[in-house]
Length: 101
Image (cartoon, rainbow, N blue to C red; front, side, top):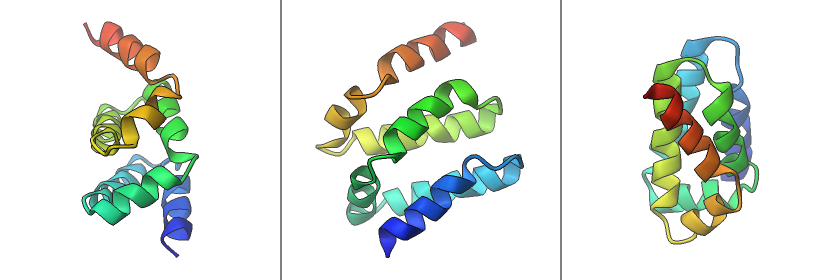
């Protein structure tokens, strides 16, 4: 049940409307505040790579901030950092930082 819900919300982070994307991220952030929710997010093998891709695809700064917040939340869990390091997270974050400064 939870995994189905995550997949439905994850689809919304690609919505063309910024407010819908923001609401989707807010939902994932709320879901991730609970240990079970964060673990469920990490078990979804698509979410981390998808969020890492959003670091270069997302143009709206308020959404990009939510993306970074969610990645940070997921990486605070024991299995989060190793799973994140299986993606392009370091190069994408470095690229993001270099674009901002």
